[in-house]
Amino acid sequence: MPRWESDAQGRLERAALELFETQGFERTSVAQIAGAAGLKERSFYRYFPDKREVLFAGNGLEAHLVAQVEAADPGLTPVEALLNALGTAEEFFPSREFLLRRGRVIAANPALAERDLIKLADIADALAPALERRGVGPGQARFVIDVVLAIHRRAMSRWLAEPDTTLAELMAQATAELHEVVAPPAPSSAESAPNGPASRGA
Image (cartoon, rainbow, N blue to C red):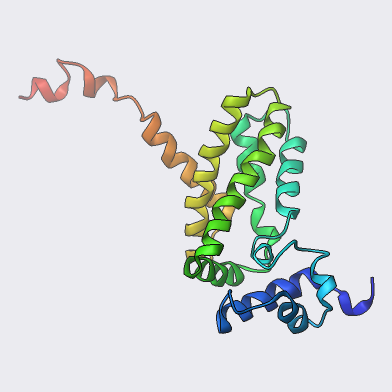
């Protein structure tokens, strides 16, 4: 690869984000993005199918997540395998600051917000067969994926606001919160017994 194309994908992502912020998504062309990154327009299409995808890591993220699930320890539950895989998702973006700015651009552009939802559906579609190969039934696989993606979204919003934590840590925290809601701890025998300390003192 020519030296001037070093980190071409990252340069395209950063250039696109800057242009989307300054002149708007609709007014920005692929040629402008490539030019701002110091590349030819045809180089853009080596990494991304269109200008929307430049903010969604192309198809690399889906392939990475599938590989992570397939390589997960067989002893892990489907939820654990997915959580571990999604905990590495931030590696596909240049920085936390990039993700913060990216979030604002997506929120301000309906076409990008729609693409964000489509991307999540694409990721779910890609992960379902990987879970099925681990012995999870088709219907159950999609249900597990939807739950874990919801955990990931909650953790991601916190991760962007809390620079001293890792995404994996916050995903574990969100998972624990969900578990408390779905399966709250049973009351202690002293609290539940009719003749416990509280009733005796009444």
